[in-house]
Amino acid sequence: MRDIESRGDGPHSPPPLLFLVFGASGDLTHRKLLPALYELHRKGDLHPKTKIIGIARKEKTTQMFRKEAVDGIRAFSRHLPEDEKDEPDDLRDFLERIHYFPLSFEKSEDFDHLAEYLTDPGLLEATNGNILFYLATPPSFFIPIVEQIGRIRPRLDSFPKAGFRRLVVEKPFGHDLVSAKALNVAVLKVFRESEVHRIDHYLGKETVQNILILRLANPVFGALWSREIISCVEIRVFETIGIEGRGAYFEESGILRDMVQNHLFQLLTLTAMEPPVSFDADSIRDEKVKVLRALVPWRSQKPSESVLFGQYSEGGVLGDPVMGYRQEKGVDPLSVVETYAAMKLEIQNMRWAGVPFHLVAGKRMSRKATEIVLHYRKPPVALFRLAGCHDDTENVLTLSIQPNEGISLRFGIKRPGSPLRIDQADLAFAYSQIYPEDPPEAYSRLIYDVMKGDATLFARNDEVEKAWMFMEPFLSLKRDPMFYPAGSDGPFEVDDFFSVDLS
Ligand code: BG6
Image (cartoon, rainbow, N blue to C red; front, side, top):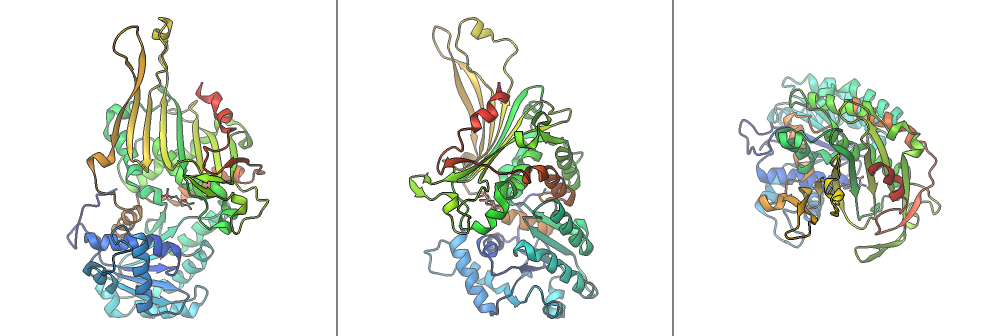
């Protein structure tokens, strides 16, 4: 992991490259990629010669694509409010970098034309021959596109100034273990693993990266990170939003595939991994893979006993009435797909054996919160209780990933005066107190790292496969979700589901 502080075209800034976005008409390009690239451009973190080439099926001109780009940036970039009518100079300069190339993903001849276009000496020479392929299409196109890139790659590589080739793949990396392996095989026929960057945007969040800093740069916390002292670890990702119009997609994925197998497992592996031997991409990813290899259902129970599924019904979120999942467009009115999942897991290794890891992901919850919560053991003797004093003290370390980024530690204190009373207090740190500026967008950070060739914050092929391998028996379980009203704290059954483990 490197620092994002560098600027301009200095020795530490990313090299020039052709940034090819497959799926340029899609939501992801307009919501995330172009705003992130614009942010990088504004900060001077795009090389002056870098060009962005949007590629999609629709026939349109570069001018039309640039107009769409402005609309997307206005709608989704915090650097350009929607109501600001003027086009700032930096936006005009940014648009100059953008071009459009129409191409049908199934047509070999279109890729031949792309190869001709890319080997235009002027274009490639200016970027030292460097090309970054970004797959932002629906996943069904990933393999066909990679195969076509494989076909034209020798032509691109024979260009006298052959620079680097990098591939960025968006989640989902497969739908299950078999499809994930098929995708990896197809990708690795054309690219070396070191050229591949599988994006999980959770790794681009500053507070997610801070998990390792907290643990590894601070002995005071690092020493408090094992079964000796921790009784339970909770990882929760609660969202107030629902499925955002993606009914058809969600019916196929459910929250296990959409959130747990990727985002929650990233939080889990960073929380539980051993310190790496060095701070480079493979050393870190080696340790994350070891966590996945040691992962089992809690106390080796059957998968069906270590997961609880829920689905939101009609309700109200933050004061607004909202429909139930089954009423959403594209959803079967009798759907049993889960919009909530709670899992009890164990990491059977020397550090964690016997500590329950509770993972919960839910849509349409009462609040938005991504948190990692470490519960510490109680003292071996309840000294104060034995002396007749009420004592609820539990040391709890909470890492708030979003939206109120920060860290807090709960502990007991003596209430002044007599008789003896113990209250609870928090040592709390909020990012916003020290850094009033919003942190960089996750996508800006990740794109920056790809341009620099740093793969630390990206999933490796074996990591993705191990996560699917663990998830496989859960995916095939019969669904019979517990219903919870939208805007609540999830199915009430979850209290019983988890309660035995915290005692
Ligand atoms: C995406 C999921 O990967 O992550 C969405 O497909 C989810 O369903 C989103 O809402 C959550 O991301 P964030 O950054 O808002 O927590």
